[in-house]
Image (cartoon, rainbow, N blue to C red):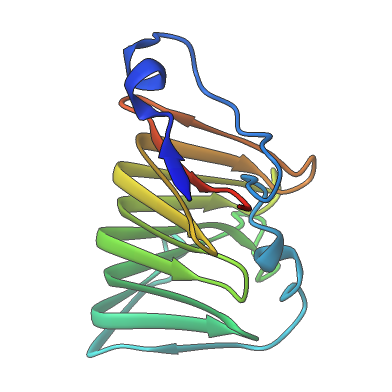
Length: 161
């Protein structure tokens, strides 16, 4: 039997932090794929060596281990020092991120690699098993395994009978 907490939560102006049993905002699945090879497919590829950007457009899909990120546009911004380190990964135009443990959708996603943070914005939908969270913005700190959903938050948490 499930219940919806969204009515009271959507009315609060404060950010909502989830800590209910079985629900979390840690994106633990992203930690599990670090260091694995990355494969990207798309219709088009544009490389700008002056800005350090690589842009994949047209049904772009980035895969690493069991993680998949898909969007009409995926941008990879490399470190300005020129050591081939990825500084930031950006996805636009309707983003889907799937790991072994969760799936998230939003209009945009930005992963700051050095900071270890992920921000998804625009009608964000996060599913973890049978639990569902929605809101305007999802922010996850992969290093601290903490996260928050902000703006128009609704939550559906499945409970044990």
